[in-house]
Length: 244
Image 1 (tube, rainbow, N blue to C red):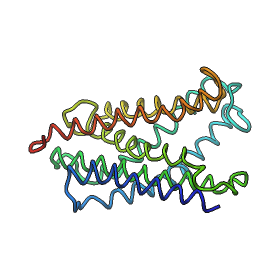
Image 2: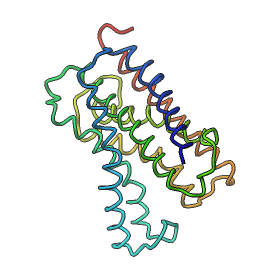
Image 3: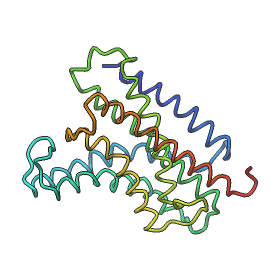
C-alpha cells in the first residue's frame, strides 16, 4: 500500500517548509554543523518504539496479567504506566545525543538550535514509522492517499510538537534559555503526557461527548499544543541577542 507513503511524503514536505524553513532557517543559520543530529533523532524513533517501548509493554502486561489490547479492565497501576511510557521513553531518547556534545560549553543560541533539531528530526522519523505501521494494515490497502489527510495533518503538527518538547526538555519552559536540568525533562514528559491524554481516552473508549465529537477533539488537540510550542520556541528566539 503506497498511498500512505504519499501522504507521509506530503506531510514531511510541508513540515520541512513550515517548521524547517519558516522557523529554523529564518531565525538560525542555513548551514548548521548540528544537522546530523536530526538524522540520528529520526532513526531513534523506530529504535525507541521497537527496542524499548514494545519490550517494556510486554513486561508490563506479564507483571499485571493483562492480555490482548489495553482496556479499562486493566489495573489502574498498569494504565498509569501505560499512559506515561511513551512520553518518558521518547523524551529521554530525544535528548540522549545531546549529552555527548558538552552542552555546558555552548551558548544559548546553539543550545536552542540543538534542541530544535533533535525534536524536529524525531518528528520526521515518527511520520515514516507510523506510515510503515499503517501500510501493514490490510483493511487500508485500497485507500487513496487523500483519505489519509487526517494522518498527514496530525503528523505535520507532531513535528513542531516534538521540537517544542525537546526545546523545553533542554532549555526550560520559560522565555530564558537555561542549561539542561532534570526538572525541565519532567516538564517535557508531563506536557507530552497531557498531549497523549486525548488519544489515551479514545483508545480506552472513554467518551467525553460522543464518538464523532471525540474524533474531532482527537484531531483538534494536537493543533492546540502545536500553537503552544510555536509560541514557546519563538519567545525563546526573541530572547537571543540580535533578533527582534
